[in-house]
Image (tube, rainbow, N blue to C red):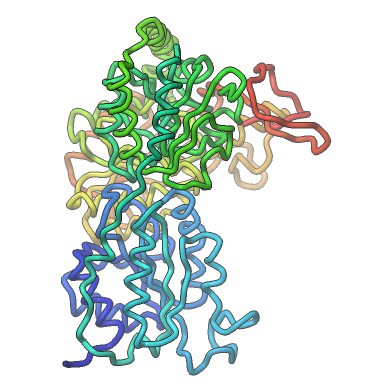
Length: 598
């Protein structure tokens, strides 16, 4: 029996587990990990320019694969580790599996307040900062138990509801020798998801049999369980139409006759009509956020609508609405059980209901055609998103498309038809600029395939330093930047509520004209290609050329600021502490300064 360091042991196991990529940034606390991973394995090592980029690249990687092997991140000590906090929170609340191996100081110096130690409330207590936003946050305290702790951390990140796990490894422990007889990691990579309770399935089927206007509403749980095929089979077997949340974008084929598209604040006409008029909602892998439900005004649960709720996380069941049947279950297993039972019970399509939804779909498409084909210049968001989807569908239908928050949230859900399962939105934390970095991870996970980020200029500027990484890796990334020199979604709402904006428009002191950086020149200075688009007929050729080039390319689109945007639901946001609030349908009056709107 020989000896290896703890860092070498972890690196060998990660390679044995099939790890394809490790994302990270060098800092003095993770040198041993980096040395072992980079020089003693064939794992692809991706060096980034900021620690938060490493998390977001891993995030995009997971959203493309949704299975083992996990993406691995390594960062180091003090502010380096702290830079990961916002994107780790995104991963935690959006069920993104990854293992983050962080370096901290040597145990010999614990509690002395040395460089970058988190010491005031306990020796090297950075892991305490991370506990509320991770599935598990732990620190290795002995070299002889480090490998066991690593394997359990890996298993925790992957199993059940996936999520980020942080494992801090002191510098001296990374470098300490241990026996090289490493355990078989296979058992830690296999997990058996929970299936629904049979009695719950029976009760659900009784509700489904008696429903006249059922709708299935699904979220990102479909992707994490790999339930795409099961969802289609369930819908076709029962004739139940399917609506998706923005986080569940692409969970169901958008050209399917039972597809209702996205629901919520920026939902489709048919999707929101189905949600408002359903007498039964089958919620799967979703927890009904305010974005999905128009501030909890879209559904009339439990008064007129009953809810069957299936989620792998028991704590999410009934969080927003009381349930008629709640089942802790993996989405795929839950759908398969419901389909089998529904077929056995003779459940069939309610043709009056689906015909009405078809009519509503046709009407909504006609009503919104003007936005999708708008010839205004500066460009309309709907035209850009629609043309993006068309070009991708024709040239590279399996390409990853990540659309950001901000004003893009008003158009990505309903004006960006998905040609594959890989159209993704960061739908809970809504971190601005997430897409700029996450598309790199998605590209790496698809054998360096094409990936497109759709985001505003404010969002891009927050993450612009990811461009050099794409250039260094020669990834075929296209950033489509909607440039209007303002935080448009905030601006629109503030003007509606208060008649004026605050800190939304960017301009130089003493000048009225809005101002922003030259993003095309910025991209070129970092080694990428840059294209300026000022007219609608210029955009699609520019995108097609960028995709065909295979080069990292930024397309800066001059977008309009004053034209009314798409907002399917204007809902009240409580602004008076003394007013009572409760969920449920409300009228949609013009919002006044007494309530905030979103």
